[in-house]
Picture (cartoon, rainbow, N blue to C red):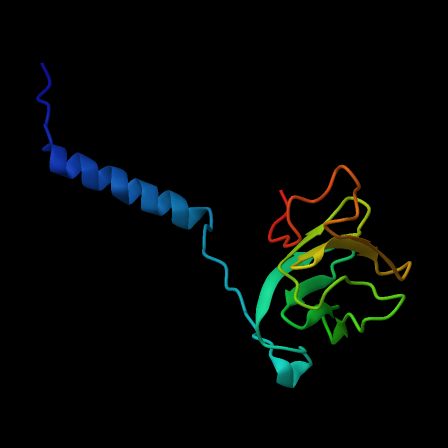
Length: 146
């Protein structure tokens, strides 16, 4: 009969841990380095406080602020504001929430209701508390989309 060597449980655990570490190292599982850049009004952002962020199907980043909607194409900012005249794209300047649908329309919610617009078409559609007849919005103040 061959003599057998019994290793304590402690050594078995260390051997498993060592094997796992070698496996991870051999297959090159490393953390990725990310670079972040903070933007502010000096970079062209209209205001420094952002309430909500969404990215559309074209890669454009939209930011809802207390003073309009900012559009960032990766290089520069453009601000869309309600100027209280016909042809405005957003209902209210203070944007509480935002959603981008499958048709790439940007929905915004504010204290005055909600609406959507198509940036490429350049037109907006608004829904206020009195816009739906019998199917009114439960409140003027839209704070989130489900």
